[in-house]
Length: 257
Ligand SMILES: NC(=O)c1ccc[n+]([C@@H]2O[C@H](COP(=O)([O-])OP(=O)(O)OC[C@H]3O[C@@H](n4cnc5c(N)ncnc54)[C@H](OP(=O)(O)O)[C@@H]3O)[C@@H](O)[C@H]2O)c1
View 1 (cartoon, rainbow, N blue to C red):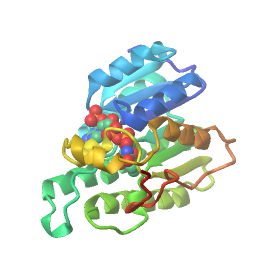
View 2: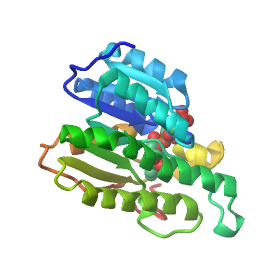
View 3: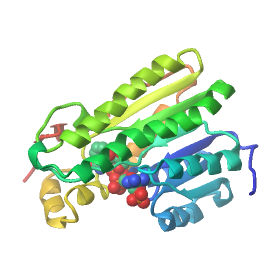
């Protein structure tokens, strides 16, 4: 294994195979970061790595957040390659279905809790000792506007995202004085593959949601993530909520003719 330990900064980006994670990897690559990219779709992250400024500063590895051995193997590969992680960016996430709670599919609920809540916690647990040792680090998590407002058809997804938000608040307490920054960013509707997954592949349902409406883009979100990371080490953004101008809550959208 080729060990690269002289890089100024290293970012670990989950969900880099698509949407916000992919755009965030591009943004951090432009800034000269070494990158550890993870997702289940390895082909996508390998293709992304080849397209970046410095492909030799990029590590790609399969990551399935529903599997603890996969999380451990991913973080070990990053550690072997770079010897450190300066910024952990949890972009990976999933929402499945919009049924009311009495009709929810338990396997889908488990997938959401593992991907959006337990997996990111396990990743933080794996990289935190290294950050404490180096006396610096930044955990940036992509939550969801859905976590901030109770609304129908989102019980499992919204509560998983709300759970990770409280985990991060506690993490902030546990790491106070260690030089570690913790940021949670809650986006509203963003034009990625997310809605298509949520609507189980129905492009008609996605089209209806987006009709007459301008969502955020992955690039908008990558800029917000970069903004939080680029501030001086003594500045911590605890919480950022980012919405399309025409969205005020998960259920209130202004549609234009
Ligand atoms: N788009 C929105 O409207 C919206 C709104 C609020 C919050 N969010 C949040 O924003 C984040 C980014 O999502 P996105 O909008 O960029 O959606 P996306 O394009 O669907 O990307 C989701 C990413 O998560 C990865 N992922 C899913 N399950 C995984 C698993 N078990 N293990 C590892 N990686 C997994 C996917 O990669 P693989 O399939 O290759 O594993 C993919 O790279 C998510 O946390 C999502 O909950 C999105």
